[in-house]
Length: 147
Image 1: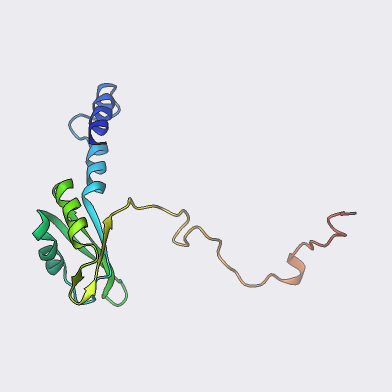
Image 2 (image 1 turned 180 degrees about the vertical axis):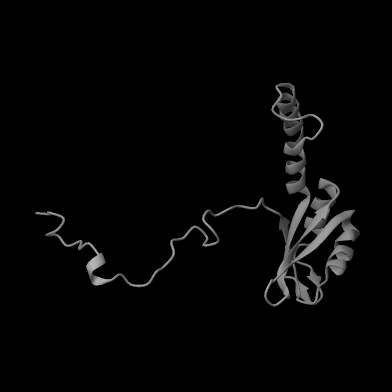
């Protein structure tokens, strides 16, 4: 897979699609492969503690715990970024299902952020309450001319 990415990257550079000095395509691909999702974290786990726990498997570039904006408390999951794919794979194999601060943690490769469309509604329509009697078109068999 890595070889295909390198070959594809070289081709895209040769035709001028990717700037050779800043290969954002390959850097982004590598970033997804070395970033791990960590779920089931204790509310008392700190970014420093998370980094220390995962550093036994390799060089940790960044450890981030996702916090709730309102309560300023951990949401119980975070991300750990490793310097290499091998270190990330080792951490996934060794730490998935293990205990950290009294809680069993779940480790998996992080997935790319997906936008659901719309402005924060998850892509679902906004409920505006029940319709007023005069605003609704009747959908009875008589109005649909179903004979």
